[in-house]
Picture 1 (cartoon, rainbow, N blue to C red):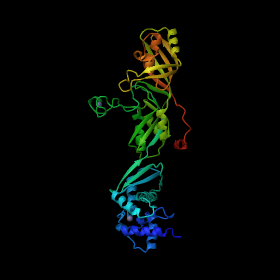
Picture 2: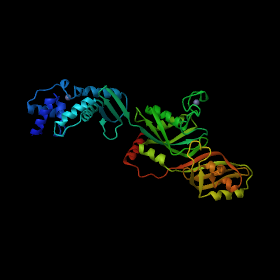
Picture 3: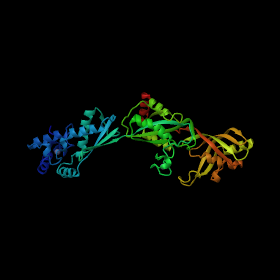
Picture 4: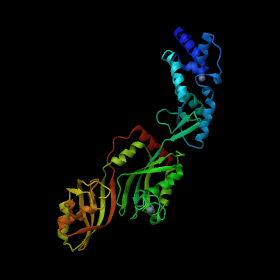
Length: 425
Ligand SMILES: [Zn+2]
Ligand SMILES: [Zn+2]
C-alpha cells in the first residue's frame, strides 16, 4: 500500500517547484509518514508517484550536497575518535543557518510531518559510525558525544567523565587534601614557590590522582572528599571517603586493584588508598553532602599543671554537649563569620600527665576540635579551657574514623557499577 496520499503528492509537487531537492531532502519533508522507510526511499516513491525527474544530491537546492557526504562525515567522526575507548556514543550535528532557513520554508509547503535535517544527519551518521566501529549509539548516557560541525568539517568530542570511589589514609602531617595555590602568586608560579604555583609541594589529591590520570589517560581530575582534615592533621583508621572524577578519560576500563597499588606506591607512606572501586556521579553528591560523624585523637598540652580529677570532670562536662562555635580565627580570612552549634557526641581521656593529655573525641560533622580544646579566645563555648580554667591547646590531631552516613538505597546503576568493579578486581 502506498503510504502517500494525494495531499502528500501535491505538497511534494509544491516543494519541487520551489527547490529541486534530492531524494533524502524530498523524503525528509514527509519523514514521519510510513514506517520502516528511509527518507531516501520516501523521496524516490514520491518522485515516482509524481513522475518527477531525479535530482542528484550535488544539485539539491535544500542541502546543497550535504546529504551526499554521510560516509565522509562518519569517517571524520571515526578519525576524530582515534584511540578513544568507549562502548556507547551519540552523534550531534550543526548545520549552516541558511540551510535551516531554506528547509523551514520548504517544510512549510508540506503536511507537518517533516523531520529536521539535524535529526536525519544524527541518525544516518550514527548508523555509519556504529557500522565502522562496532559500537552502539546511546541517546541517554553515551560514553562520548561527537558533535559534527558540517560547516567546517570539524568534530568536537564530549567525553563522559569517570568516577572512582575510595577511602584514603593520610599518614603524615603538613599535607593538604587538595592542591593549594601559592599565597603570593595565586598559582601563577613565583620565586617563593619555586615556580610551582603551589604552597605545598604535594597534596592527597595529587598523590592519588596522578596514577589514575595516567591509567585512564584523563585530561584532569576533581577530588571530592567527605570533608577534609586540617593540613597538619593525619587521617588514620578506616580513612576518609572520596570520589575522584576523571575528566575526558581516553581509557574507560582498567585494573582497579593495580591502580590502587600504583596510588599507594606514589609518595609511599604518605597516603594510602583503600577499597578503590568504580563509582557514579550521584555518589559525588552523597560524598559532598554527607554529614559524617568523625572521631579524633588529640594530643593536648596545658599551660599549667592540671589535676587529674579536674581534667576528668571538665571532659565529662563536654560529653554529649552542644557547643557554640564562632568561625575560628584561623580560618576567618576565608570563611563567613557565623556561630554554629555542633554536638560533642563523646569525649574521653585516653592518657594524661600533669602537663598534657591524649583525648579521643567523637563529634558531629563540622565540629572544630582545636577550638573545642582551646576555646579560641572565647569564640567556642563551652571549651575544655573554659571548664578547666587552664589554657589548653592541641599539639597533634588525628582523624581516626569517618563514619559513612547512611545513603538511600543504591540505584540500579550503582549496583551495576559495583558489580563491574568487583569483576575487574
Ligand atoms: Zn538534499
Ligand atoms: Zn608563587
